[in-house]
Image (cartoon, rainbow, N blue to C red; front, side, top):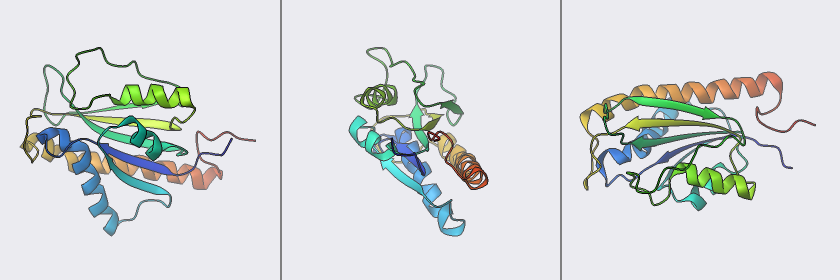
Length: 178
């Protein structure tokens, strides 16, 4: 088994569905910030529409994957951010049929598929940003836009902590050790 290496930060979304563009907007912020303060070597920033095949190709072989996506709970507090993490093989339950999503299949389904194919991410951290508006159009609501700079800093901290651990120990956390 090839050792896991590097970090993927993936923003899921659709910039033409208002707050559903939060993941993509976060990646744009991280790209701009990286020009001033580079992330550790081996960190890849990517946008994805949520297609399971594309997600799997982005996180495959990565020791750490961070995913940013919008969520739309019934009593949303726009801009509130949730952080969830999992170890390799720990999977969320797929959402029930008829869930409210702008993606055909969700992240949970992509993770289940990847696990069955042996192509799941190493360590996984998911950031879900509560949104208010997923109608057609561009631009985030003010509350969601205001939450993203803080979220970008939290993601940078996660990536840097992972990079520090890798330098200190000499191996990628989550990689099989011989």
